Image (cartoon, rainbow, N blue to C red; front, side):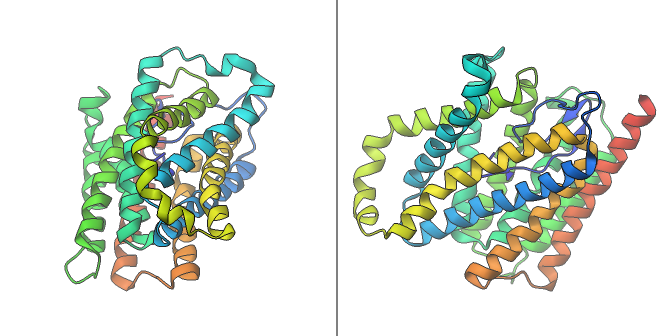
Length: 326
């Protein structure tokens, strides 16, 4: 939600996508476009990334500490990406033209992961995911200052409407934990910062960004492992084989989700795919219902609909504006 535990939704912004995904620059090649295939693959990626969120939430529920969960998520993710990418691309896949920005982005991603998993500890998955959809709207609202793009009233209106949707979700009487709500909003702002950092590494190959996204978190958490591991040992010793499998699957689902997104953006334009990223609400709600019996009430669905509508509408507006300029 966003590369938090998963990427945040993308919205066309200027000449590149604004989302915090591994796809940081246009990937279409002449004759390679297949919009329907791109949409299908993107929807599959939302299910994979929702599975990541569900797996993380579930293993925290059986006692796995947050920091150890994140260490497993990053290390397994990195190992799988290296195993899949290096044989075909070689060591050149590690070379970044903006290494400082890659490291900064990786650090922000780690913070986004920590804040979003903390949100999932306290909130139902659908509500946590919905609040995180505020991230691209935050980027749109801040674009004149952080991205030096012309101010547009439509972007500020969309951000305001999206925030109204969030207020409906977290309204008094919604039953949501205040701590979880606070971390949900923090996660949205950190995910917005990650989206901006993604723009800074747009010159790099998306697979390079994908590798460094996992590498920075893996290195940081591995260095902290002497502190992380001892308090986690009692909980880890009691895990069953199934629970270990679910824990390890967090890295698998993250890797697969991001690779599917890269393939989706190779097949269709960011502007065409942007509305379909909101299908993650469906996967998050479905998994939340199946695993925990949690399903948003009518007012929460109203808030979710407002957030999605504002994001999709501004995406269409931005696409039309860019098409006219082109």
